[in-house]
Length: 260
Image (cartoon, rainbow, N blue to C red; front, top):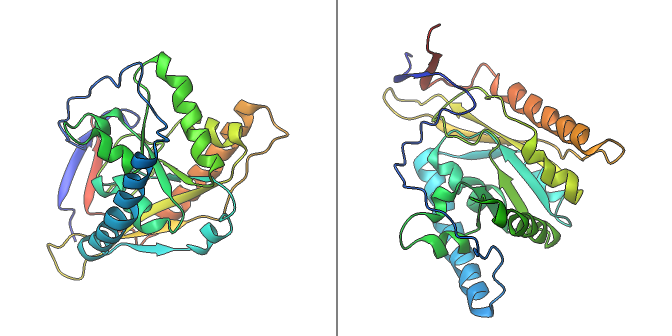
């Protein structure tokens, strides 16, 4: 079956094909990452468990045929916070792991400031678990405290280290070790989640999604921080490459580097 679409790219690290057309807004130097107000926390719990989890988990199952493999790896970490690293292949990445892949543990997601730039939805996406990346140096300390706070509460934090969406991409793009600072600093385990695609039974239909979890990886406290970050990064990257290299990973869109 021929790919439905061919996409030409230049830069694997920086090209983005999400096409959200969202005008990113500055968070504000006084942006509050952690809200402890009882009313806020109640509506956050309600929005997450009564709306997002039942509705969106059903949606991804029906519309995208999402299946999970090796979910038992998560059960090994029920008494600790941990970080999930995943390849970024679709707009449903914004919620599929949160609402359907990781439960009953509460999950948060490191997101682009785009998520909090949509008029009227800034508070709601925070209630659902968005932790936006800082837009200024003044916000960075509070951002780090928010990640630490959620991990200390034994929550899961989801990170897409590729940063940009490449729809239906069947490979793994290079990513830096910078986001592996969080598990090393907070001494928490990580799990890799690799998305692959199942060939549709009927011509013209979209492929179905399979998300495969790795066994937990742990930071090596005997190494210097940068070295420990690189070691974790390599374990996650190699796992993703191994899973996505499966011959059954269906190529719906084909990506070609310009000039090749």
